[in-house]
Image (cartoon, rainbow, N blue to C red; front, side, top):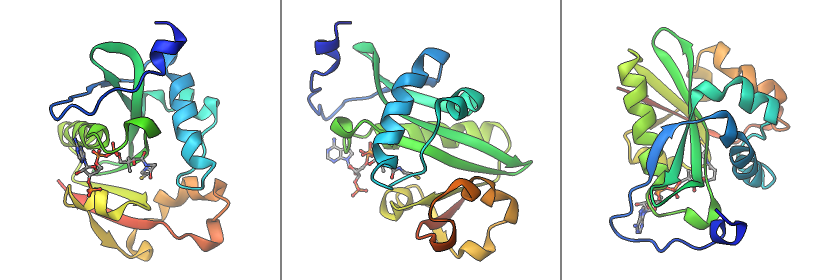
Length: 170
Ligand SMILES: CC(C)(COP(=O)(O)OP(=O)(O)OC[C@H]1O[C@@H](n2cnc3c(N)ncnc32)[C@H](O)[C@@H]1OP(=O)(O)O)[C@@H](O)C(=O)NCCC(=O)NCCS
């Protein structure tokens, strides 16, 4: 698809349904750009391309069904233990926000979690209202198992974390 076509705005049709599929190696460039757009604004943790390749199997992406080479967003389900997983790296291309793409990705990640036998999904987020719509509830950071803080060691806000912990029992 020509570059100019990729930049075309997609009208927010009421019945717009993104296609959700597992991420492929060729998707890493788009995922890197979308995630780090928000990381630069300190709205989520930055990811290196190496991290994205290493954890690629965690990720699903949303594409436009009528232009499947156009990545609309991505999100990952990362396992921590036999019954515990995190939704992370969820980011929607800014021009596609508030059109249901994030909702479609989270729904798919929750189905994946259920299929894998996960009982509890958590998220660290600045978007409690968005996650609350799925039934996630806010919990104290201190109630989360210590092992989930692994990624936080790389975070510039390690000692002043202002993200909200939320959990969902599925
Ligand atoms: C948070 C984020 C993932 C949400 O993705 P999104 O695609 O905008 O989410 P949705 O469109 O499914 O839902 C967002 C809102 O738009 C509304 N919406 C969805 N489709 C709509 C439509 N067709 N018309 C009007 N409103 C619509 C939803 O009801 C929802 O409303 P709410 O905010 O009042 O709950 C996205 O904004 C993002 O990438 N943020 C930056 C990174 C980030 O914070 N990620 C989370 C890290 S844990």
